[in-house]
Length: 316
Image (cartoon, rainbow, N blue to C red):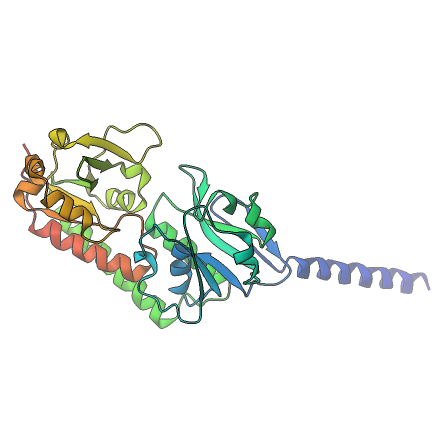
């Protein structure tokens, strides 16, 4: 009788342990170090627009996405959003009711450690108002675009995606080929200096590589990217057009989030000719902050490689 009691107790304990394990059947730790644990793998996902792109390349389609109306749509332009509920609002004006209507199991956005902020607004942090709608995961943005894509892959895999599927493997291989070709082109042009910038009628804003993940990747792959004198934590070193030649640059990459607007501003600015790269015609696009997929990254690296190959050192 005593043995039966002990056996029964063990059975109850094992059942309780299994129940506890099932209660945390799915978990994921995000870029901010926060762990989300759920009873079951989430199925209804709502994502920030860029996060949606990061997941959709791996076959994980959200039921809804929220978009900042003022932001570029380049990150998700390659995807068909048919059948996905799209919420468009001004920055920081997304309302919890809009998300509640989609009945999400999980909200996916991006975490920016440089400013300790989340894409989608002030209330998108795990302690913010939207955490009452569904658990929030913030994929880390800022250190590397390749790392960002891989982090989305990790989340997608946790959600059931097969990262070795032929289409995904093909895009990853195309990216690796493009990266190899870029590093080879860079190695053939020692001394070539590249400056990334945004331009307006009033000023030239030189990007701080530490604040732009793709520029950090380029630097890690051998490109000599200009580092401006910018206040700590800021994204730009701002120059008047009269001082636009402060930093020697053989190649100028211009922020392309708003299409040709920035390039047009440079072309219409007579003082831009004091920049060596402009005078030499060695100007290209900078895919500023919008890349989220292997496919788009490969295409941008191919364009950059072609620019590097046709450029020469023109600075003194």
